[in-house]
Amino acid sequence: MNKKGFTLIELLVVIAIIGLLSTLAVVALSSAREKARDSKRLSDVKQVQTALELYYTDTNAYPVESAITLGATAYACLGTSGFGTVNCTSPYMGKVPSDPLSSQSYSYTGTSSTYTITATLEGTVNGLSETVSATPAGIFD
Figure 1: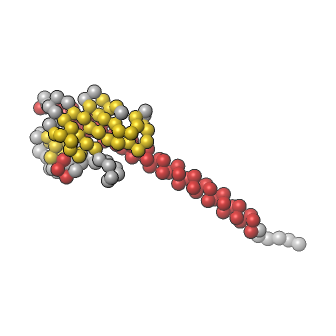
Figure 2 (figure 1 turned 135 degrees about the vertical axis):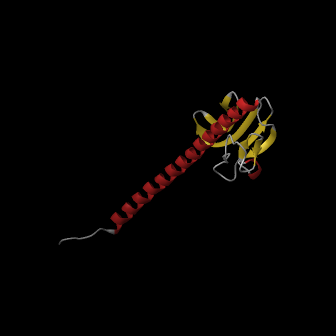
Figure 3 (figure 1 turned 30 degrees about the vertical axis):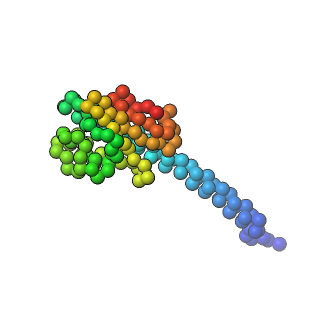
């Protein structure tokens, strides 16, 4: 007698293996997305730091603000008069980045001699975790 085809048990085993592999792939992808958002946050903060240093070089002061949300409509660019709405005159940063997740944001507090940019990470990147702060001295947690 010549059998052609698969038994029900064989099919169920294959389906279970495929289900397990797809679950592992989804978990790995979720972790990769989290790391990508955290890397973007650190990159955004570094870009804002660079723009602030250029601003400081020209004006000999940092923009004076108390606890603003970077990337919000009122603080969407960095020009010669500090943070402002879109279309700043002589921009140091034409579009200030906002956090990749709409539920989070970057905050900026500055005096003429120093500033602090704060961002919240979802995981750990390069030894930095949780809330990171950037100042003229660098980025730390």
